[in-house]
Structure formats: C-alpha cells, structure tokens
Length: 198
Picture 1 (cartoon, rainbow, N blue to C red):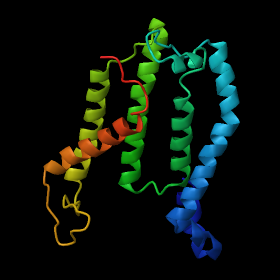
Picture 2 (picture 1 turned 30 degrees about the horizontal axis):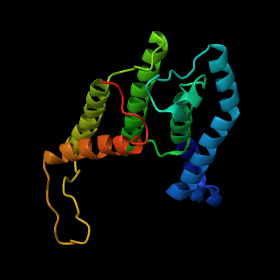
Picture 3 (picture 1 turned 60 degrees about the horizontal axis):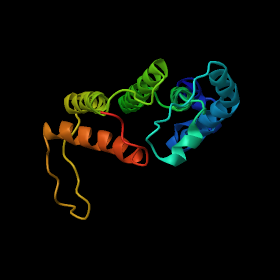
C-alpha cells in the first residue's frame, strides 16, 4: 500500500526511487511487524489472561511442558496479524505471489487458531486431530499448486542443483511438488513440538 502510493512519486522526488528495491521494503516491513508485536504484545497478553485463555497441557506429556500451564495461548494471532499488515503496507500488491504467500500464511494460521479454540472450548489438550490438520494443509497447498499451474506463462520446469542442463518439466506433477514442499516445510518447522492428537 505504501509502495503503491509513494513509489509513483519517484518521478518528482528521486529519493523515492529507493522504494522499488525489495531489500529496502523487506527491512521496513520487518521493522513494522516488530513494532506491531511490541506495541500490542503486552496488551494482548493481559487481555488473554483476563479472559483466562491459557495453555492446556496433557497430563501424560513431557514434564518440561508442565511449566507452560497457565501461559496465555493464541499468541500466534498477533504474529500473523503483524506479518499480514506489514506485508500489505510494504509489498508490491500487484504481484500475485504476494497474495499466494498471504493465503498460505492466513490459511495455516486459521488451522492453528481452530486447534487452539477447540482446546479452549473443551478445556482439553486435544485440539483438531492430526489427520484433519494435515488434510486441511494439503488442500491449501494443493490450491496454491493449481493457481501456479494454470497461471499464464508460468513454467513447470525445475532446476536440479549441480546439474545445470537437467531441467525436467513436471507438468501437473508440479502441483504435487508444491504440496510436498509447503506441507513438508510446516511439518519440519513444528517437528520440535509434540505430535498432534489423532
């Protein structure tokens, strides 16, 4: 949004030309997200504590997790809010890939929100089952793959590291690759957490 308003002025003020650089806007988007978290973080924590929205811990889980009991949950809402707002403010919104990344971020965040909400509503450590979470993640990733596959001019050729001349065209298999990469990344980034209930 800021990019859309300010960058066109570079013809009048040459210093505004800096807004065309992704690195410049990435730095300011990061600072914006950080400031949103810092400014709203304490207020959100107090609000969650007032509403008694706290972590539900499994009694049969690791003893180290018992220290989390009473800790406010749903803090991820603030992080996703900060990332989305910062992206909308500083990104070039005419680029379709920006909206695709936001779709994945918000979609996966919504899955996490529903998981936490179910735990709170039932006053239990069991949220959305692992199978349902995985199915929802696959659907979102598959949808992203479809958008890419049918995007005019998009190539489904991939490069293989260390083999410059090997450029296989995956065709519809590119959609499966998207699902594998997106869901696999989320799974690997949460591998330090206990496995979700099934």
